[in-house]
Image (cartoon, one colour):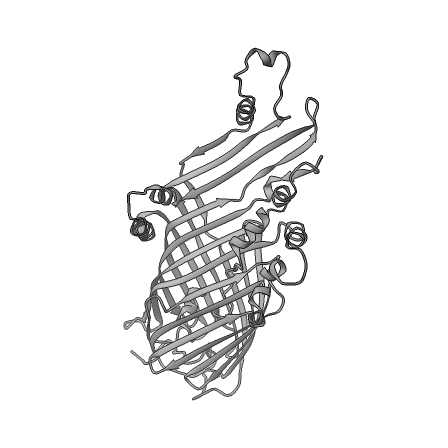
Length: 482
């Protein structure tokens, strides 16, 4: 039941695409996915812990309903046919959530074309590719698998819990160009990865016994932050919850692993109606040097089980033949532990879009050329109103252990007065080809609320959906001039 356990633990897991937020420039958090987005407000302050909450969920190969629906089929048959044999190594379970702890931004008084933003957010990111051969081996065993090589390289997984401290600069260079950059400091809390595994496990007919098992392995699991948790959980004399909280908070605020990163972005107006944007996020790395523990399995061996050679074996009746077998395997394929530091790169993300604006401007003439976004100030700080409608396409890609993963989105944006903006999307990716999303930004005075939800058709049956996503937040902001 290892396959069923894996699915139950991961549940519905997300990717990292935030296509509803991208280029939704009324929302200040859009600067997090494109530091070069047009920022028309003078300042904003996010409500702590509520300014930006993002959770996504999806599985590219299977849903909960595929296994647990009341369809009259035996669950063991469904696990075998739909999970163990039904998924391949490109299928994944992945998850990301993000919570803003602090968020804010302001326009420079001495240089109104510059807008500065800053904050702290807490993030979890995990991915597990389906280890098909290992799942088959766990489900079927090796008794009826003579001659089959089980690929140990099918195991690829990575996960990380961290806090990110960031500061961004957004500059409207002229009426065509807006550029932005964001510096980041990563403070790692927990991390694990096992993504460069090679080797095989093979069962053949033996010479001295019925079967011979061969293993040729080069596998490694690297972790950081878990040993401290284990020590706290093993200490029965202490109050564990305060100790766990103190441990995680300390590591999240520069008491654990550290790293640096950079985000880059731009907005360019080809005309007053046609706009292109792009961003490159998390160009950075982490140095894992505190509380590290690594496990490796390297070597090759062929064994035929316990070999008892008579009558020599009778000379030592106390001999432990099982331990002899274990010692033999460990000598040929040593399992080792160490606490060496290691370096890891962040999952880099790429966004791009092209947008066409049309419809009657909401107030006043729109200067030519310009970005023409809603309530966007020019370099001199004046306030204008943009087009009521926009339509376009977006591209998203993320670097993953098995190579880049991409998604394509078409969107329509509608603005209603100065208080409401709506964005509808259709996205095609490896999770689903029927992902319809809807986002809403509402403003009442200085208070802004937004809610973004993906794959709306899946909400009719969450257990049968392979993807779900939502984001929401509260901000206080001002569109007034300095």
